[in-house]
Length: 260
Ligand SMILES: Nc1ncnc2c1ncn2[C@@H]1O[C@H](COP(=O)(O)OP(=O)(O)O)[C@@H](O)[C@H]1O
Ligand SMILES: Cc1ncc(COP(=O)(O)OP(=O)(O)O)c(N)n1
Image (cartoon, helix red, strand yellow):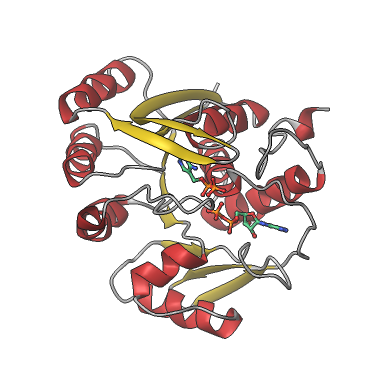
C-alpha cells in the first residue's frame, strides 16, 4: 500500500487540517499518516484558538514516522511559526523526503490568521523551495506576489512572477472568484487551465486542504504532477457537488463521496 504523510494543524470538527487530509488519503486508498504542527480549536464557524507544538516535539514525530513507515508523498499545510518551519525543513532534508506538496496556508476562509507575519520569509525562502508543487488560493497568491489578483489574467501574471523565484509547479486556485472556479497550473512557461463552473455550495470548509491532499495521494500512487492535479480537481469538484450540509457555518465536504 502506498503511504502519504500530512504535516498540518488540526480541526476537531474534521473539515480541514490533518483530519480532512487523512480522510482524503483513505478515499484514495493510500495509507495516511500525520505529523501535527498545532492543535487548533476551530469549527465550521471559525478559529477560536491555536496551540503550536514545540520544535522538539515536531522532531520526535518526524522520527516516529520516517524511521518506521517512510512516506511516498507528503502534504504540508498549516505551519504558523518560523521555528517550526525551520525544524520541518531540517527534518525533510535529513530524511531526503520527496514528492512534497506545500499548501501555503495563511488565513482561514473565516478570516483567522494561520501563519504569523514573521514566518512568511521562512515559508517562501526555505520550505516552498523543497516542494514539487505549491497550491496557493487567491489571497495566498496575493501575499506571495504582493499585489491584488482580480481575474484570470492576474492569476497568470502572478504565476509567472512566482516562477521567477520558485522552480516547481504552481497551482493557483480560483475558488474565491464568483463567476467560475478555474485553477491555473503553471510550470516553465507551460499553462494549463483546469476549468470548472462555480458550484453553488456554501459548504467549502477545508476545500484547499482536501485538494492538496488529493494531489499528494495521486503522486504517491505514481502519477505525474499534471495528472495528479487533474485527478485531484475532479475529486474536489465531486466533493463540492455532493452537497453535504453539516454544522452552523461553512460546512465540511464529504471526503468519501467517491466511495459510495
Ligand atoms: N464554489 C466552488 N465551485 C467549484 N469549485 C470550487 C468552489 N470553491 C472552491 N472550489 C475549488 O476547490 C479547490 C480549493 O480552492 P479554494 O477554495 O480556492 O482553496 P482554499 O480552501 O485554500 O481557499 C479549488 O480547486 C477550487 O477551484
Ligand atoms: C488546521 C487548518 N489548516 C488549514 C485550514 C484552512 O483550510 P482551507 O482548506 O484553506 O479551507 P478553509 O478552512 O479556509 O475554508 C484550516 N482552517 N485549519
